[in-house]
Image (cartoon, rainbow, N blue to C red; front, side):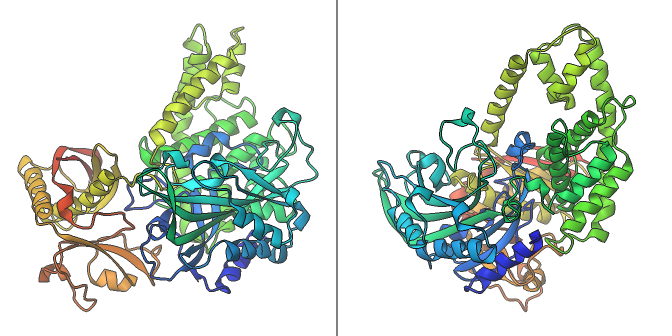
Length: 618
């Protein structure tokens, strides 16, 4: 069974049970400053899980391309990736545990024909805040799962909320237990270094999580207790890569049709075999990183030193280093040839051709050009790094980490270089530096890589709405050629990038600031509307009009007085019907008065034809 067949079987299965197939979100969301990437199928649906009505109804299903930058360092084993595809279905207050667990069990055992005896399930064990999930246990037992294949885990494994464990949830926040399904690869012998007894969450590789049903059923009260929600939601996620692997009873997701074509090409150009224990990790990293890079490029990302562009640059440069390692010691500064990038681009685009807006013929030239250009730039950086190694009299763990951080040199490559100096590197020193860097990165990533479920604090929501007012004010003062190019929000400030060819004057900056604050003082209503793409375009809603919008249903936010969204009107703004109308997925305040006011603190250039404004709330 191919990955395409599995994907379609899943969608058809849930559509036959009353689910509407909703379009997947873009990998890089243009108007969501709370996250760098779409990292789960749940992420675009958070407003609806929080109670907002979805225009397609209460039962939804789709397959969502996702990217998790925090997993970059984990890639190399048989299961971790940065890019993946998440199959998901949702119930927004309609069906609950009985239907969900029964259906996903039926899909796995009947549609995919997975042997029941190799499937194990987990439930929430309960704690002082929330009782054990006995309801799920009884449902699993009614489906024929024996007690010895039902495992209990605590809040770290089988609980979901936007803020983590129950004790960390603020008053009013929602959450609930989840129930996971694991596949057992009986051909893998348990490694006792991971514990005396193997179990689903053991790290030895014998078990692989393939399905997770989250039951959002509780709300935290002001007293720190938990009460049942009137609207109980289901959020399911299952990785297509893992499901494709278990259908073949193969624990290595890289041996599926989602990666094998890329692996084969890399073997050809590196001269190394996937069967070699010394090469397998590098071949997996290259396959994952180049697939992720291709998707990011198609999504409009280009390599840079900031935000999404920095992640893309890091992916491509890691590929260059891993190819350097595989090919031994090539000529000075040598990097993979253009033919390699072209062949990889063909392989990735053909795997997904016709899916998620991917068109092999349309996107091939772009993907190849961006990767080749970045490889060439890194070739020069690689030479600089080699020269830096020659200059250093002594390379300790910290110096080795600095080389890794600055030039992308892995520890193994540095070790080989310093052997010529008769030196050795203490791996523990390097690992200490690396761990410190990871801790700092994780701290900086809060709100950026939490599945899009963080970054929705009250002040950040105010900033998000303020960016809409700022965008329209810039267009009013500078002209209609102004369009958003990016944004970033923290609890301390907003940052807004826009197209404009010159430096703004002080008078222009003041005029924009005054106009935004005027609209805030007017306390304009903020409302979300759903309509077809053509209706939104006819209303002159601000957005990127490309083929990736779901033509049948788009989300727009309108800011204005008692406006009327009339699809027959050519331009509502000319009639004074609203102030701002923009494509967006939220979240926003309900009226502008609560924002208070903003102060523009800086205006600067960030690239040719693109300016940046920084502002903070008053």
